[in-house]
Image 1: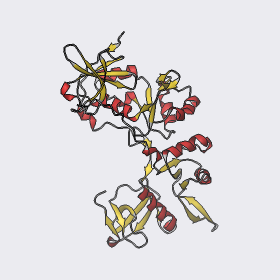
Image 2 (image 1 turned 90 degrees about the vertical axis):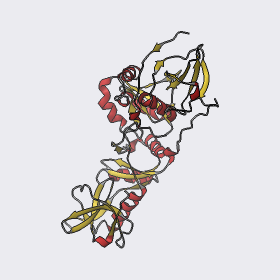
Image 3 (image 1 turned 180 degrees about the vertical axis):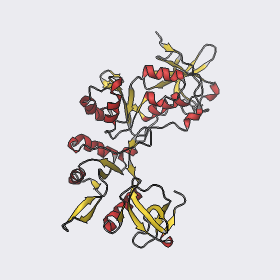
Image 4 (image 1 turned 30 degrees about the vertical axis):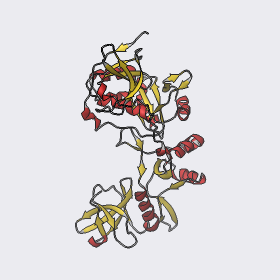
Length: 373
């Protein structure tokens, strides 16, 4: 058997384990590749319109040792992984065929990777404290599936190889593309060689949460979602114009809130492309993930906006900082906000997504500071 073995002796640091972003356990992943590296800015803009996490391999290994970066730049140049099924990404790839194409094919079928495979791949390129050798094929004497039971690789499964002089090595498959060849001790092997596949937790995609949609036609999008019997919320307040006529004014321009599951949002995006659903992304997390609003925060904001929106002062500019507090004032019991002090004036800013919208003047007996938040 012809072997294609590239030896890359690396010693990876354990201190990077704490900063290693772990992808959400959300079904399967597919691999895409950019047709031209110069299309990277365009590709990022297109990917941000999707309700899926994604990451570029070269970005994830940028702080790894030089041999690992060299290997990744050769094997995964301009490659990215998207947390979605091949079927759900097919229309997207076809629509932007000048930019993307699928990578990782088995016959005519696009390979879908499990969360466990992606997690193990990131683990090996970041945190393994051993000498690694990347190779294309298994040796003839590697065939028994075993599990490591000690060390920082405890729980990792691979194919055991034992040489004539009783040198034990473990071959771990990474993404059906390459094997990691690791020297091990016999004492590290589990007493049971039973292989138990890891079943990814897909409950995340079916859990209803408050997501934030961005649109320049907020009212049209809100009305369309309501017609489709979706739980949506558009923050407005009733005001008077110069002629004394009442009308609804947007409280937060550009934002529509929808309570749905990721699976349902993906279904809406596919079945109703005219909606042009664009999820607001949380850029404070790598990879970027759709922004969600905690249920308590959303309930508080809806209650205050619908009940007292016309009676409270509206903030013209964003207010930063402030201690988190919970109101004790009648009619606002349990509502949370941030304390703002201006001289002798004490006010509580109430809003959502970190944006303060309303100001409520209070005294010391009408709120309590939340120390554990």
